[in-house]
Length: 153
Image (cartoon, rainbow, N blue to C red; front, side, top):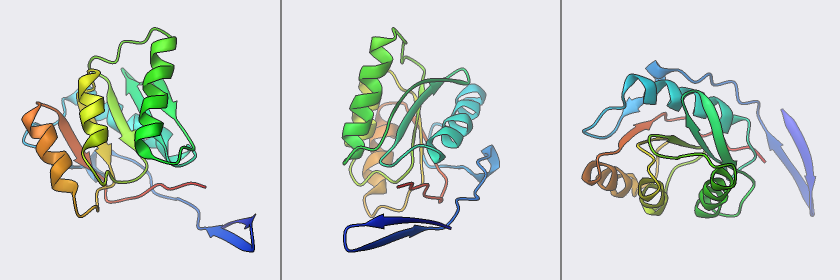
């Protein structure tokens, strides 16, 4: 358990002992991830677990392309990651995206799809999960859901 002080109190977090694996991911879209995308989704999930929330990780061919960390919104984290990838000259076509928490709106998958990301993984659990799934289905993207939120403060 981690304990941190906060204004007028403390924050406690249990250790995140979940280990990412392909078998722990449920395909939520009509298009499943390719073998390489699935490998990259597992890799990105491992990285996002250890990244300060709100976190987005972009990966391709088992390489971290960029991450957006510690932002107040998931959209801000994604935009930070896309900007970082661009500064290093990384091509996001065929990359994957991992999020440490669910997408309450389809905005992140829309932004990701427009820059070439082809597969997404997140914990799921939003009452609006179907909106993101529908966007992925309509745009040929794969999405997996883990059921495990990796939220790190």
